[in-house]
Image (cartoon, rainbow, N blue to C red; front, side, top):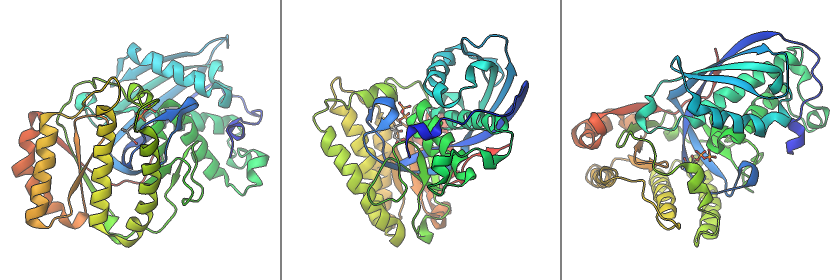
Length: 374
Ligand code: DP6
Protein backbone atom coordinates (compact mmCIF):
# COMPACT_ATOMS: atom_id res chain seq x y z
CA UNK A 1 0.00 0.00 0.00
CA UNK A 2 1.44 3.31 -1.07
CA UNK A 3 0.37 6.91 -0.51
CA UNK A 4 -0.70 7.23 -4.16
CA UNK A 5 -3.40 4.67 -3.66
CA UNK A 6 -5.24 7.17 -1.51
CA UNK A 7 -5.52 9.66 -4.36
CA UNK A 8 -9.13 9.25 -5.50
CA UNK A 9 -10.47 8.65 -8.97
CA UNK A 10 -12.32 11.67 -10.44
CA UNK A 11 -15.58 12.25 -8.57
CA UNK A 12 -18.76 11.57 -10.49
CA UNK A 13 -21.25 13.34 -8.27
CA UNK A 14 -21.67 16.97 -7.35
CA UNK A 15 -22.81 18.23 -3.98
CA UNK A 16 -23.88 21.75 -3.05
CA UNK A 17 -23.93 21.35 0.71
CA UNK A 18 -24.55 18.92 3.54
CA UNK A 19 -23.26 17.74 6.85
CA UNK A 20 -21.89 14.61 8.51
CA UNK A 21 -21.40 13.76 12.17
CA UNK A 22 -18.92 11.24 13.54
CA UNK A 23 -17.98 10.41 17.07
CA UNK A 24 -14.52 9.03 17.64
CA UNK A 25 -12.81 7.78 20.80
CA UNK A 26 -9.43 8.52 22.29
CA UNK A 27 -6.87 5.72 22.68
CA UNK A 28 -4.11 4.81 25.10
CA UNK A 29 -0.87 3.33 23.79
CA UNK A 30 0.63 0.23 25.43
CA UNK A 31 3.76 0.32 23.24
CA UNK A 32 4.39 4.01 22.62
CA UNK A 33 4.90 6.09 19.50
CA UNK A 34 7.61 8.62 20.29
CA UNK A 35 9.72 9.89 17.41
CA UNK A 36 8.69 10.43 13.82
CA UNK A 37 10.16 10.95 10.38
CA UNK A 38 8.96 13.37 7.71
CA UNK A 39 5.30 13.17 6.66
CA UNK A 40 4.13 11.76 10.00
CA UNK A 41 5.88 8.40 9.54
CA UNK A 42 6.54 6.82 12.95
CA UNK A 43 10.06 5.78 13.91
CA UNK A 44 8.65 2.65 15.54
CA UNK A 45 5.41 0.67 15.61
CA UNK A 46 2.94 1.15 18.45
CA UNK A 47 -0.19 -0.56 19.78
CA UNK A 48 -3.08 0.92 21.73
CA UNK A 49 -6.32 0.12 23.48
CA UNK A 50 -9.18 2.08 21.96
CA UNK A 51 -11.16 3.85 24.69
CA UNK A 52 -14.90 4.01 25.04
CA UNK A 53 -16.10 7.01 27.08
CA UNK A 54 -13.45 9.59 26.18
CA UNK A 55 -14.52 10.75 22.77
CA UNK A 56 -14.98 13.68 20.42
CA UNK A 57 -18.10 14.31 18.36
CA UNK A 58 -17.62 16.40 15.25
CA UNK A 59 -20.28 17.84 12.97
CA UNK A 60 -18.79 18.85 9.65
CA UNK A 61 -21.08 21.07 7.56
CA UNK A 62 -20.01 22.06 4.07
CA UNK A 63 -21.28 24.41 1.40
CA UNK A 64 -19.95 25.04 -2.08
CA UNK A 65 -18.12 28.36 -2.48
CA UNK A 66 -17.53 30.54 -5.48
CA UNK A 67 -13.73 30.50 -5.66
CA UNK A 68 -11.55 27.48 -5.01
CA UNK A 69 -8.22 29.20 -4.50
CA UNK A 70 -7.87 28.74 -0.73
CA UNK A 71 -9.16 26.78 2.26
CA UNK A 72 -12.11 28.22 4.09
CA UNK A 73 -13.32 26.95 7.45
CA UNK A 74 -14.36 27.93 10.95
CA UNK A 75 -13.96 25.84 14.10
CA UNK A 76 -16.26 25.71 17.13
CA UNK A 77 -15.63 23.92 20.41
CA UNK A 78 -18.75 23.51 22.51
CA UNK A 79 -20.51 26.18 20.41
CA UNK A 80 -17.74 28.71 20.92
CA UNK A 81 -15.66 29.81 17.93
CA UNK A 82 -12.02 28.79 18.43
CA UNK A 83 -9.69 30.61 16.07
CA UNK A 84 -6.67 29.26 17.92
CA UNK A 85 -7.42 25.83 16.33
CA UNK A 86 -7.15 27.33 12.83
CA UNK A 87 -3.39 26.86 12.26
CA UNK A 88 -3.64 23.15 13.15
CA UNK A 89 -6.57 22.64 10.76
CA UNK A 90 -4.87 24.68 8.02
CA UNK A 91 -1.75 22.48 8.33
CA UNK A 92 -3.93 19.37 8.26
CA UNK A 93 -5.82 20.54 5.15
CA UNK A 94 -2.53 21.29 3.38
CA UNK A 95 -1.20 17.83 4.20
CA UNK A 96 -4.31 16.01 2.98
CA UNK A 97 -5.27 18.19 0.02
CA UNK A 98 -3.68 15.85 -2.54
CA UNK A 99 -5.86 13.00 -1.23
CA UNK A 100 -9.08 15.05 -0.90
CA UNK A 101 -9.13 17.28 -3.98
CA UNK A 102 -12.52 18.78 -3.02
CA UNK A 103 -11.19 20.64 0.03
CA UNK A 104 -10.92 24.06 -1.63
CA UNK A 105 -14.36 23.77 -3.24
CA UNK A 106 -16.25 24.17 0.03
CA UNK A 107 -16.55 26.31 3.10
CA UNK A 108 -16.50 24.06 6.18
CA UNK A 109 -17.99 24.58 9.59
CA UNK A 110 -16.35 22.23 12.10
CA UNK A 111 -18.35 21.89 15.32
CA UNK A 112 -16.69 19.74 17.89
CA UNK A 113 -17.29 18.70 21.49
CA UNK A 114 -15.51 16.30 23.83
CA UNK A 115 -17.00 14.06 26.51
CA UNK A 116 -13.97 14.87 28.66
CA UNK A 117 -13.31 18.41 29.87
CA UNK A 118 -11.08 20.40 27.52
CA UNK A 119 -8.87 21.33 30.43
CA UNK A 120 -8.41 17.76 31.64
CA UNK A 121 -4.92 17.33 30.22
CA UNK A 122 -6.38 14.58 28.01
CA UNK A 123 -5.32 15.30 24.46
CA UNK A 124 -8.27 15.67 22.11
CA UNK A 125 -6.06 15.52 19.02
CA UNK A 126 -6.42 11.74 18.55
CA UNK A 127 -10.22 11.62 18.86
CA UNK A 128 -10.66 15.02 17.18
CA UNK A 129 -8.51 14.36 14.13
CA UNK A 130 -10.00 10.93 13.61
CA UNK A 131 -13.58 12.27 13.80
CA UNK A 132 -12.71 15.03 11.31
CA UNK A 133 -11.00 12.58 8.94
CA UNK A 134 -14.09 10.34 9.01
CA UNK A 135 -16.41 13.28 8.25
CA UNK A 136 -14.23 14.17 5.26
CA UNK A 137 -14.35 10.56 4.07
CA UNK A 138 -18.14 10.62 4.29
CA UNK A 139 -18.14 13.62 1.95
CA UNK A 140 -15.79 11.82 -0.42
CA UNK A 141 -18.08 8.79 -0.42
CA UNK A 142 -21.01 11.02 -1.46
CA UNK A 143 -18.90 12.60 -4.18
CA UNK A 144 -18.21 9.10 -5.45
CA UNK A 145 -21.92 8.83 -6.16
CA UNK A 146 -22.56 7.40 -2.70
CA UNK A 147 -22.09 3.91 -4.01
CA UNK A 148 -19.31 2.54 -1.78
CA UNK A 149 -18.37 -0.05 -4.31
CA UNK A 150 -16.92 2.72 -6.46
CA UNK A 151 -14.44 4.04 -3.93
CA UNK A 152 -11.53 1.63 -4.09
CA UNK A 153 -8.93 2.40 -6.76
CA UNK A 154 -8.60 -0.51 -9.18
CA UNK A 155 -4.95 -1.10 -8.26
CA UNK A 156 -5.90 -1.56 -4.64
CA UNK A 157 -8.96 -3.68 -5.39
CA UNK A 158 -6.61 -6.13 -7.11
CA UNK A 159 -4.88 -6.61 -3.76
CA UNK A 160 -8.20 -7.86 -2.39
CA UNK A 161 -9.29 -4.84 -0.33
CA UNK A 162 -12.99 -4.31 0.26
CA UNK A 163 -14.55 -0.86 0.01
CA UNK A 164 -15.39 -0.74 3.68
CA UNK A 165 -11.78 -1.53 4.46
CA UNK A 166 -10.58 1.17 2.13
CA UNK A 167 -12.90 3.77 3.69
CA UNK A 168 -11.56 3.12 7.17
CA UNK A 169 -7.94 2.80 6.03
CA UNK A 170 -8.03 6.05 4.13
CA UNK A 171 -9.70 7.76 7.10
CA UNK A 172 -6.93 6.43 9.35
CA UNK A 173 -4.32 7.54 6.78
CA UNK A 174 -5.80 11.07 6.80
CA UNK A 175 -6.11 11.15 10.59
CA UNK A 176 -2.41 10.25 10.87
CA UNK A 177 -1.54 13.32 8.84
CA UNK A 178 -3.42 15.37 11.45
CA UNK A 179 -1.92 13.69 14.50
CA UNK A 180 0.00 10.41 14.55
CA UNK A 181 -1.87 8.71 17.37
CA UNK A 182 -5.22 9.70 15.77
CA UNK A 183 -4.80 6.93 13.19
CA UNK A 184 -5.30 4.42 16.04
CA UNK A 185 -8.68 5.88 17.07
CA UNK A 186 -11.02 4.61 14.35
CA UNK A 187 -11.49 0.98 15.26
CA UNK A 188 -11.22 -1.17 18.36
CA UNK A 189 -10.37 -2.78 20.52
CA UNK A 190 -6.62 -2.98 19.88
CA UNK A 191 -4.96 -1.11 17.03
CA UNK A 192 -1.42 -1.32 15.65
CA UNK A 193 0.24 1.51 13.74
CA UNK A 194 3.68 1.18 12.19
CA UNK A 195 5.27 -1.60 10.17
CA UNK A 196 6.18 -4.60 12.30
CA UNK A 197 7.51 -7.76 10.69
CA UNK A 198 5.42 -10.11 12.85
CA UNK A 199 2.12 -8.27 12.39
CA UNK A 200 0.52 -8.95 9.06
CA UNK A 201 -0.95 -5.93 7.33
CA UNK A 202 0.74 -3.45 9.69
CA UNK A 203 1.71 -0.19 8.01
CA UNK A 204 3.45 3.10 8.70
CA UNK A 205 0.66 4.83 6.80
CA UNK A 206 -2.41 3.91 8.86
CA UNK A 207 -3.59 1.97 11.88
CA UNK A 208 -4.92 -1.59 11.55
CA UNK A 209 -7.02 -3.67 13.89
CA UNK A 210 -4.76 -6.04 15.83
CA UNK A 211 -5.18 -9.22 13.76
CA UNK A 212 -4.36 -12.03 16.23
CA UNK A 213 -5.94 -13.90 19.11
CA UNK A 214 -6.50 -11.95 22.35
CA UNK A 215 -6.95 -13.75 25.69
CA UNK A 216 -10.22 -13.46 27.59
CA UNK A 217 -8.45 -11.56 30.43
CA UNK A 218 -8.10 -8.51 28.20
CA UNK A 219 -11.78 -8.35 27.27
CA UNK A 220 -13.39 -5.23 28.66
CA UNK A 221 -10.12 -4.09 30.23
CA UNK A 222 -10.64 -1.03 32.43
CA UNK A 223 -8.83 2.31 32.32
CA UNK A 224 -9.39 4.87 35.06
CA UNK A 225 -7.68 8.12 34.13
CA UNK A 226 -6.47 10.02 37.18
CA UNK A 227 -6.42 13.73 36.42
CA UNK A 228 -3.24 14.85 38.13
CA UNK A 229 -2.55 18.00 36.17
CA UNK A 230 -5.24 19.56 34.08
CA UNK A 231 -3.17 22.42 32.73
CA UNK A 232 -1.80 22.88 29.24
CA UNK A 233 1.22 20.69 28.49
CA UNK A 234 4.51 22.59 28.89
CA UNK A 235 5.98 20.74 25.93
CA UNK A 236 3.86 19.68 22.95
CA UNK A 237 4.09 16.15 21.55
CA UNK A 238 5.36 17.59 18.28
CA UNK A 239 8.34 19.18 20.05
CA UNK A 240 8.92 15.97 22.01
CA UNK A 241 8.89 13.81 18.87
CA UNK A 242 11.40 16.16 17.24
CA UNK A 243 13.77 15.85 20.17
CA UNK A 244 14.15 12.15 19.30
CA UNK A 245 16.23 13.25 16.27
CA UNK A 246 19.84 12.94 17.38
CA UNK A 247 18.78 11.72 20.81
CA UNK A 248 21.62 9.57 22.26
CA UNK A 249 19.31 6.61 23.03
CA UNK A 250 16.83 6.87 20.16
CA UNK A 251 18.06 3.99 18.00
CA UNK A 252 18.02 1.56 20.94
CA UNK A 253 14.58 2.81 21.91
CA UNK A 254 13.17 2.21 18.42
CA UNK A 255 14.60 -1.33 18.46
CA UNK A 256 13.15 -1.92 21.91
CA UNK A 257 9.67 -0.90 20.71
CA UNK A 258 9.87 -3.54 17.95
CA UNK A 259 10.87 -6.18 20.48
CA UNK A 260 8.19 -5.12 22.95
CA UNK A 261 5.55 -5.39 20.27
CA UNK A 262 6.79 -8.89 19.39
CA UNK A 263 6.58 -9.86 23.06
CA UNK A 264 3.12 -8.32 23.27
CA UNK A 265 1.82 -10.77 20.67
CA UNK A 266 2.42 -13.76 22.96
CA UNK A 267 1.28 -11.85 26.05
CA UNK A 268 -2.02 -10.93 24.41
CA UNK A 269 -2.50 -14.49 23.26
CA UNK A 270 -1.56 -16.24 26.48
CA UNK A 271 -3.00 -13.72 28.96
CA UNK A 272 0.14 -13.48 31.12
CA UNK A 273 -0.88 -10.39 33.11
CA UNK A 274 2.42 -10.16 35.01
CA UNK A 275 4.32 -9.95 31.74
CA UNK A 276 1.72 -7.44 30.48
CA UNK A 277 2.25 -5.25 33.54
CA UNK A 278 6.04 -5.32 33.20
CA UNK A 279 5.92 -4.43 29.54
CA UNK A 280 3.32 -1.66 29.82
CA UNK A 281 4.86 0.06 32.84
CA UNK A 282 8.33 -0.15 31.32
CA UNK A 283 7.02 1.44 28.11
CA UNK A 284 5.46 4.32 30.07
CA UNK A 285 8.63 4.99 32.04
CA UNK A 286 10.80 4.66 28.94
CA UNK A 287 8.69 7.29 27.19
CA UNK A 288 9.32 9.70 30.06
CA UNK A 289 12.97 8.66 30.27
CA UNK A 290 13.34 9.75 26.63
CA UNK A 291 11.98 13.17 27.58
CA UNK A 292 14.29 13.44 30.56
CA UNK A 293 17.35 12.52 28.48
CA UNK A 294 16.69 14.68 25.43
CA UNK A 295 18.40 18.03 24.91
CA UNK A 296 16.74 20.22 26.00
CA UNK A 297 15.40 17.85 28.68
CA UNK A 298 12.02 18.12 30.32
CA UNK A 299 9.84 16.39 32.89
CA UNK A 300 6.10 16.02 32.38
CA UNK A 301 5.41 13.90 35.47
CA UNK A 302 4.40 15.73 38.66
CA UNK A 303 5.11 14.70 42.26
CA UNK A 304 1.57 13.25 42.41
CA UNK A 305 2.30 11.09 39.35
CA UNK A 306 5.14 9.43 41.29
CA UNK A 307 3.07 9.13 44.46
CA UNK A 308 0.38 7.29 42.49
CA UNK A 309 2.90 4.97 40.83
CA UNK A 310 4.37 4.03 44.22
CA UNK A 311 0.91 3.46 45.69
CA UNK A 312 0.03 1.18 42.77
CA UNK A 313 3.23 -0.81 43.30
CA UNK A 314 2.62 -1.33 47.01
CA UNK A 315 -1.07 -2.16 46.51
CA UNK A 316 -0.10 -4.74 43.90
CA UNK A 317 2.48 -6.26 46.23
CA UNK A 318 0.14 -6.51 49.20
CA UNK A 319 -3.01 -7.63 47.34
CA UNK A 320 -1.72 -9.66 44.38
CA UNK A 321 -3.82 -7.41 42.13
CA UNK A 322 -2.98 -7.14 38.42
CA UNK A 323 -3.52 -3.39 38.33
CA UNK A 324 -0.86 -1.35 36.51
CA UNK A 325 -0.30 2.13 35.12
CA UNK A 326 0.61 3.79 31.91
CA UNK A 327 1.26 7.43 31.01
CA UNK A 328 0.99 9.49 27.90
CA UNK A 329 2.85 12.72 27.28
CA UNK A 330 1.63 14.37 30.48
CA UNK A 331 1.21 13.97 34.24
CA UNK A 332 -2.12 12.10 34.25
CA UNK A 333 -2.02 8.41 35.14
CA UNK A 334 -3.99 5.74 33.28
CA UNK A 335 -4.77 2.96 35.75
CA UNK A 336 -5.31 -0.29 33.81
CA UNK A 337 -6.93 -3.41 35.29
CA UNK A 338 -8.94 -6.47 34.32
CA UNK A 339 -12.73 -6.26 34.54
CA UNK A 340 -12.94 -8.85 37.32
CA UNK A 341 -10.99 -6.48 39.60
CA UNK A 342 -13.20 -3.47 38.90
CA UNK A 343 -14.81 -3.29 42.36
CA UNK A 344 -11.62 -3.77 44.38
CA UNK A 345 -9.49 -1.42 42.28
CA UNK A 346 -12.16 1.30 42.41
CA UNK A 347 -12.14 0.99 46.16
CA UNK A 348 -8.34 1.33 46.17
CA UNK A 349 -8.53 4.36 43.86
CA UNK A 350 -11.16 6.04 46.01
CA UNK A 351 -9.35 5.47 49.28
CA UNK A 352 -5.71 5.92 48.24
CA UNK A 353 -5.36 7.66 44.89
CA UNK A 354 -8.02 10.38 44.58
CA UNK A 355 -6.07 12.52 47.04
CA UNK A 356 -3.42 12.98 44.33
CA UNK A 357 -5.91 14.03 41.63
CA UNK A 358 -6.59 17.70 40.99
CA UNK A 359 -9.92 18.41 42.67
CA UNK A 360 -10.19 14.65 43.26
CA UNK A 361 -11.20 14.11 39.63
CA UNK A 362 -10.84 11.00 37.51
CA UNK A 363 -12.55 9.49 34.48
CA UNK A 364 -13.70 5.88 34.34
CA UNK A 365 -13.16 4.35 30.95
CA UNK A 366 -12.65 0.96 29.36
CA UNK A 367 -11.72 -0.65 26.08
CA UNK A 368 -13.99 0.42 23.26
CA UNK A 369 -14.75 -0.49 19.69
CA UNK A 370 -14.11 2.62 17.63
CA UNK A 371 -15.76 5.49 15.83
CA UNK A 372 -19.44 5.79 14.91
CA UNK A 373 -21.36 7.66 12.24
CA UNK A 374 -24.21 9.50 13.94
C1 DP6 B 1 3.02 9.91 24.06
O1 DP6 B 1 0.06 11.65 18.24
O2 DP6 B 1 0.06 13.53 19.91
O3 DP6 B 1 0.77 9.76 23.35
O4 DP6 B 1 1.84 13.03 15.71
O5 DP6 B 1 2.82 15.09 16.71
O6 DP6 B 1 0.33 14.74 16.74
P1 DP6 B 1 1.71 14.09 16.78
O7 DP6 B 1 1.86 13.40 18.18
P2 DP6 B 1 0.84 12.58 19.07
O8 DP6 B 1 1.85 11.77 19.99
C2 DP6 B 1 1.38 10.89 20.95
C3 DP6 B 1 2.48 10.34 21.73
C4 DP6 B 1 2.09 9.52 22.94
C5 DP6 B 1 2.30 8.03 22.67
C6 DP6 B 1 1.29 7.34 21.81
O9 DP6 B 1 0.11 7.72 21.82
O10 DP6 B 1 1.69 6.34 21.18
